[in-house]
Length: 276
Image: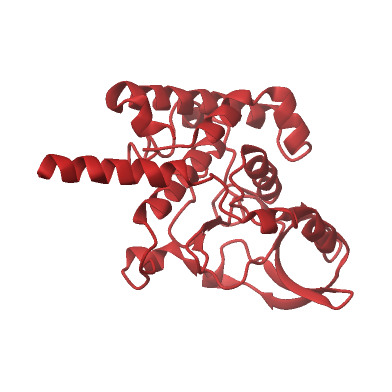
């Protein structure tokens, strides 16, 4: 009886994995990327709020955008260097968006470069109706009845793989956002794309990483194939001028570490348990 129940649970897990695409945004939302890029680039902007102090380390602006009767909010950042002791770069926000789209994750809101008050910076579409993952961890938010928990778990594994690739040590439960139908949206990538010292030889999330070892437990084959396809030429095409040659080289080194970690998990647990 227990063996039958176990087999049934394994079958159910594989069934849900097989039916889930890596993309977190819906096909309809993804189809609007170009529209929102053009909207962000050309809409009239007014200040809704300057986020200062404890509210945000980098003091970004929440802006109200309007064009042809269409209205949205966006977040504008221009932090560079070490404004409060942490290495920041607004360009990494844009690089993260383009790499996210290439990998087919579609977790990062549309992000472009735009000048504001005479300065260059990143402008990211403000996604409405989200709540932070910290609400889930605290037990204040629970998935609706009928939603398989595996759906959320698989999305978190993808988030960790992406953060491993871009070396985002600033990922925490408040900058993982959840939609009303429980899809993951990732914000805040201004502390990513590290390229010195330890950022070459270990993963943020991994067997030797500093956060939750062994946490890329299952990944889609399409995502793994996209990882394998990355080359310096592709990364330059995706991220110029927002990543340096050194930062691109570091991405590829971490890609190789991720693939080694996947091979280690496959050897330990079997391919069908790791790749779907």
